[in-house]
Length: 546
Ligand SMILES: [Zn+2]
Image (tube, rainbow, N blue to C red):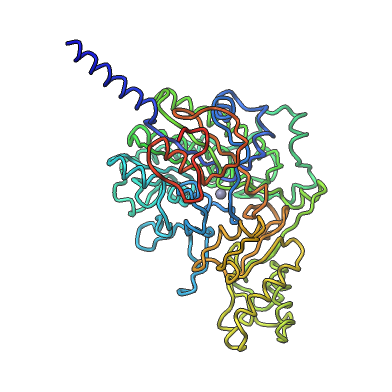
C-alpha cells in the first residue's frame, strides 16, 4: 500500500513537472511593419496588459534584428516560421522573376490550388512542421489579414491557414489545406458585414496627451501632401471608412483577425497558433511612422492585444506561451525625414508601366533606372536617347533588391554577360543613395571580408530566384513606388530592428540585451516543445533553458 502511494505520488510529481514545462498552446503574433523604435516611443501610453505584458512580465530582446537585406513581408513571415533567412527559406522577396517562364512569381503562389495560394515556394520546414511530427494530431493554424503571413509562418504541413479577402468579405483558405475546417468560415464571415457597418470612421483617441503627441510625432500640415490617401481615408483625422479595405487600413482591422483567432482557438484547439496583424502595415505605408495615425494605431493595437491576452488568460490560464515580433520595420516618409534634417530620398528602379514605350516614358517614374541604362550605354558604346525603345534596355526586370538582365539583348549585342553584370554593379555603386551592389557571381563565391551590408545581402540571395545584380540603399532611402507614402525593404536599422518578446509558460522574464533575431523564434519555441526547429544559424534564446 505504502509503495503504491509512493508510486502514485512519483507519477503525479513527474506529470506535473512535465506539464509545468510544455505549454498547451503557443501563440506567435506578428505585427506587420512594427519597428522596434515604436516601443520606447509609445510605451508611456500603453495600457496594463498589452505590450506591457511582455515588457513588464515577459522576456524582451531589445537588440533583435533581421540578419538579411530584403526586409519584406514574405521573407519576414517565412523567417519567423522557419527560423531561416531567405537564402535558405527560398522566399527571396515578395515577388521574384522566373528566368524559365519569364513571369513574376508571387511568394505564396500555387497554381495547382484554389484560390492559388500555398507554401509551395517555401524551401524548408517550419516549427509547425516539426511540432506536427513530434505530436501527431497536434494542430498548427495561421490567421492573418495577408495570405503570405498566414501561409509562410505555418508552413508546408500546416493544418490550416486563414487569410482575409475584402471581396468576400471575410476569411478564406485554399484547397491546399485538405484538413481545413470549412464550416468555421461561413459562420465567422456572416459576422463581418455587421462589423464593417459598425466601424464607419476612425477618430483619434486621447490615449496620448496632445502635448506629448506633438513631441513624438512629426505630422505638420505642410507635409501631409506626402501621405497617401488609401481607399478615401484622406490624410488627416477623422478618417471616413467607406469600404471593407478602408476598415482593414485602420486599427479596426485588428478586431477582424483577433475575433477569428479566438474562434479558431475555440473550435480547433491548436497547439500552435500564428496571428498576423497587418493593418499596422497598411497604415504605416500610407501615413508614415511619424504620423498621428501611426501613433494612434500603436496605442489602439496595444489595447487590442490586451483584450486578446485577457481572452487567453481566461481560457488557458498559465498554460500558454506567447511570442510577439514583426516581419520588418519601416523608414520615415523621405520628405518628412528631410524636414527633420536627415539624408533621405526615393530611388526609382521600377519596371516600365504598361503604356511606356521609350526611355523618356520610363524616366517619368523611374529616373534612376534610366540613369543606369544611359551609364551602361556609355560603357558599352551603345547609342541611346530618350526616344530609345524600352525593348533595347539592358536591365529587363527589377524585383527588390535585384536586377534581372535582358539576356536576349545582351546576346543580340554580342556582349559578355559577366561584363554587363559588373558594369551594372559599378554604375549603381556611383549613384546617390546606394549603399552597395554585388553581382550574383560574387555572391556565389564566399567572401570572408564581407561587410555587414554584404552579409545581409548574402543572407537574402538564392542563385536560382534572385537577380543578376543585387543592391541595397542607404538609411533614409526607399524604393520609389510613387510620390507619397513610405516603405521598408532595406538592410538598415529602421527596417531590421524589430521586437522579439516572449511571455508565459517556460519563459524566464527579463530585459535581454544579447544579440537576437526573429529567426531565433522557431528554435526558441521549439525548445519548449522539445523539437529541433529553426535554421542552422539560429539559436535558442536565453529566456528558455536548453
Ligand atoms: Zn510586412
